Length: 235
Length: 235
DNA sequence: CAAATAGTGTCTTTAAGACAGTATAGT
DNA sequence: ACTATACTGTCTTAAAGACACTATTTG
Image (cartoon, each protein chain N blue to C red):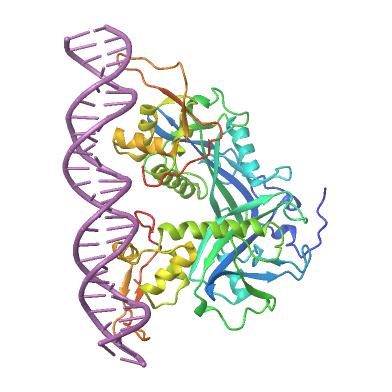
């Protein structure tokens, strides 16, 4: 199905480039980490960049393109994907006027594939330090990454978003530790549990526990129809 | 300055269309209203739409394009412009794969031009009812408008955003009325003033007041370096 | 001085934070 | 029995909401 070209659309050569870029985050080795890919082609060949790519005619939507990119570049099907914002101007890409729609994805470390996606031998996880990573990123990706980290940290304060960084089954102490890592501060156990209880988005998993040399903790999972829940107050 | 075409960019004919669309809101006649323009050309000729347009090579950025559109279509230079999000898929525009970057703008009714922008005899303000307007909108603009209204209403709960709907000088009862209109509920005067005072973003304008057959109210303005302030709690 | 709205103070009620106490496992 | 962590209850303290009171103008 080709386009009828009814209205006064811009000449093809005057159309800006349109891409999607995804900041995908996980929690590994007690630190928040982002997936980066090393660029093979110019511009910025050899530099690390957020996984991304051009919108293609066979993409069904912007979000669909983001999912395709994650699958192609890292073999990841993410359970959580949220649009972050768009960045576009005449100068950000030397090939011409360019805009990118940025997404944030979260995934539990136990859902990462042992071997990455087909086109990405050069994909690897980098720990977040502050709001950036060690290597210098291509394009304006450092700015996008910083915005993504900021978005996630802000949402941790008043939503249940961190559950997406945990396995399907987890204990309340597990969940509290994730919050504490992301917020970089200790939380009161009693207050934390009150918050979690009042939004009522978890259900206990029966008959299972976890052992050490102490009292075992109850296992929980998110209720089947769960979407990110907002607290009345900050966590 | 033409593009060097170094990397493997999509062929021009395969590039999606890219537009910006702006939901601009004001408070007139005690109701929130949005500016709509009547489309002259197909597709959707004759339908009302959000002011918008294609990204052009001479735009400096996405936000710059949004400001240009507002100036062209309505003669408005908005004091408040915020990116809402992007909407794009293969089907939303019959001319082909299309994406739009949506913005929300706010303006005080006393800053509206008496005569609108040059290309827009067919621009007019429509009251918001719920999260929509009376006419059927072109493309997916009804969805975008609803998202814009939702964004604004949500931010009213915990930010100072409504000051952008008021003239430069206003009284605290004025401000409270704006909050009440947007939230559609009464607020306690004492509690409201505590919230406003604690974020400390207003300064009194000396020597001026306002008269009726009662005690006049102090006039205030936002402090010079003001950006939207977030409350600790909801308003 | 009556009416009307601006602005402030106080009291009651509710929630938050700290912290202690109980529970349950392994050794 | 001791230790370590899970989990719950209570007490103190602070904030929020309701509401009354004072202030200042015009007619």
